[in-house]
Image 1 (spheres, one colour):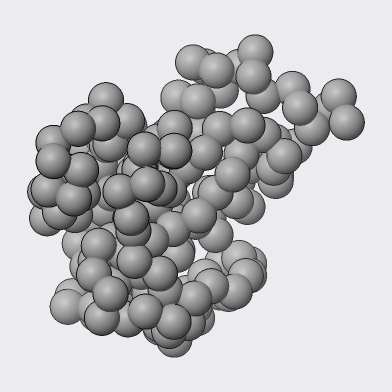
Image 2 (cartoon, rainbow, N blue to C red; image 1 turned 90 degrees about the vertical axis):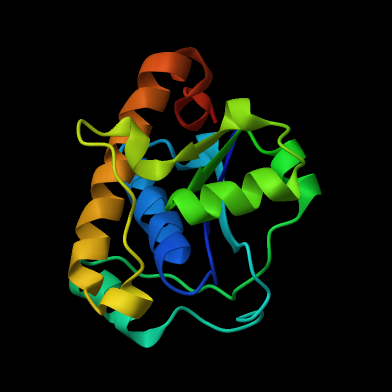
Length: 161
């Protein structure tokens, strides 16, 4: 099983969107049991809150459903994860700061796997939840393709059980 943590600032917009999008993509490919997928925030300011309503609405509009409560990322979670995928450069800095610069071999910006690497702009500030969805979807799809290519031999769990 491959452990993936999606990370943004508050864990109410971008990272739960990525968690739910990636989960749906994995399910659609018959790979859901091959992943442990979660999301976290670098801050505790939204701890316990659900997905922000405009983000949840955009997900529903695209046929993606699920529940989530905001939780702050811990160093232990980074240590135990296979991949930690952050939404922007600020999140990358925060996660590397949390780990003392360790584990950089498993910490990536989500859209670094796409043909057009970029930050996922925070829709809390831009108010463009549809653009955030498009960027996150692009990043999740590219990351899943990367995993299938790199770890294809590990992904047969669903079909074997």
